[in-house]
Image 1 (cartoon, rainbow, N blue to C red):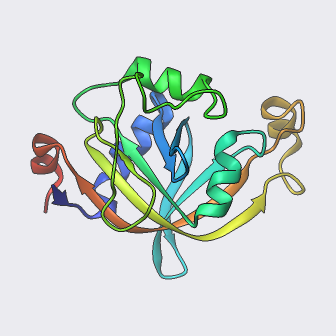
Image 2 (image 1 turned 90 degrees about the vertical axis):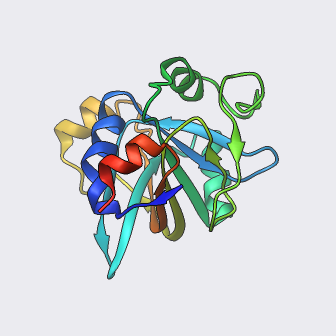
Length: 176
């Protein structure tokens, strides 16, 4: 395990998120993960922040609202395509995504939400703001194209309290 500066892996994580997806994981009984294909990594309130968007209809939504934390695990060496598809199309209301689906929940270092063991890059986040619903001031073209059923996302701002690689080859590439 190698600690990394979130700024050094920002481009890699954003590219993976936008092209293949990454795992957003929350604690619960059982823990739940879902695939996210967009979000933001940046700096806000003098803190490094990961902003995740979750629709209220998702099982993850109630869990993340209660949890006060989440993790984001990014595939590095293995693309985990089938696992990302499963996590993005199956509901944690119906199945335990960590049993028999090719991914393993392991404890994070600083938050209660687990990380996905098979991924090589991890962000651990403590929620500093949730409940910011998209919509009222959104560009109408975007709203019409992306939310024809008005099923808007809610934004969850998580302070990045840990960023590290468990993939040694990846860590060597991005370590300062």
